[in-house]
Image (cartoon, rainbow, N blue to C red; front, side, top):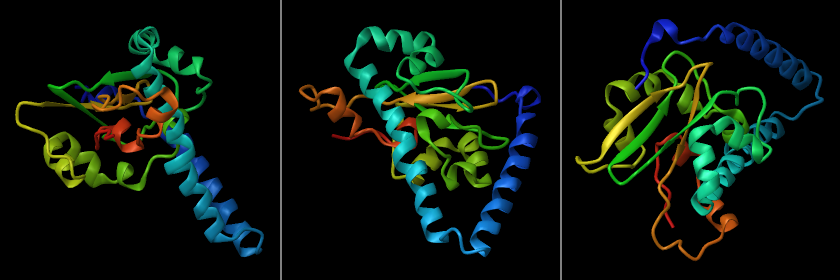
Length: 204
């Protein structure tokens, strides 16, 4: 686990906050002038948050499940391996992949803000940015997982990874049984955003 808050490296947040304020001001202006439909804007954000962004991560996971050589590269240098597939850029630097196993489940949080790997997961969901998730994930990770409907047996250890501006984590979920005959494209269709954050498992 990484909980050294003194070295958390969130200096980037000041710039991010300034940018968020500029975006909000522009958004408000466009809506007031009738140039943008708020519902359409919400739909676009929703698409990037839950569909477009996480599809990239799902392809990474599916390839790791079906290509042992790629998985080895992913585990040793995730940033480069993810870039191989064309997914890189701001908020996606310095990636580390942590693998779920039958005896270990990984959960990702950013305790001081909401560092998140945008190129592979899209925009962070509201719950990921909430203070309740950020604090409870460290104090009571099993309770948080139960809130998401994931009750893990006592023998499965839960590891919490604290993302920072320097390191952003991505969970490699366990490949579900019964998918042996599925190809990478079919497997990618099973992988959810939450499974790559660690708040869910992938099911067939």
